[in-house]
Length: 221
Image 1 (cartoon, rainbow, N blue to C red):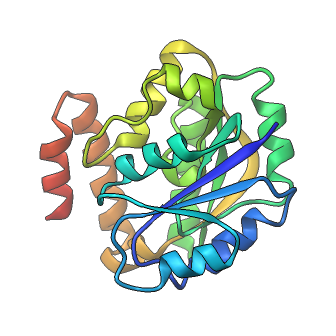
Image 2 (image 1 turned 90 degrees about the horizontal axis):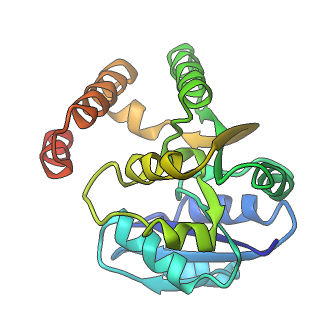
């Protein structure tokens, strides 16, 4: 397996050294950082740490798809710029993809609070019971399978769940036990309860057929 780790980001100069270092804890494959128009040193930092770099129009789906196009690996791992991979992550990916079309890691939030432990527990339960991981759990899939599915849909929100939905229509998706550590900064800014409630409302509205554009507008408010 040759793994390409694709990291989209904007103004992530503080987090990138930690994220890229976590990717190098295991057997080193390929890291592709796709920048969405940073005003800081994100691109230079990623390049200095050995990542292949590219610039894209702003939009996570656009950035992820460009990274996938540039990737030379046969397996793709989509990693948020504020998430740290577990040790021996490539072994977990290789094992999972022997019997599944795609997979993701279990979730752990840092900094941690009682509220965040509760939220991550519910997220892991949802992910395992319903095969419904979010993008911050490090989705991984073979490149040829990703291409056959059409990649990420160019939408302003929920591009991860849209891909997960299509994956599940074509084969099994497993959430492995190894935990990816994701920043809880978004929950800290708006409050754990408010953010979690907003996320659940958006998920239910999406399942009810609301457009991603309308949901993105609501989310930004």
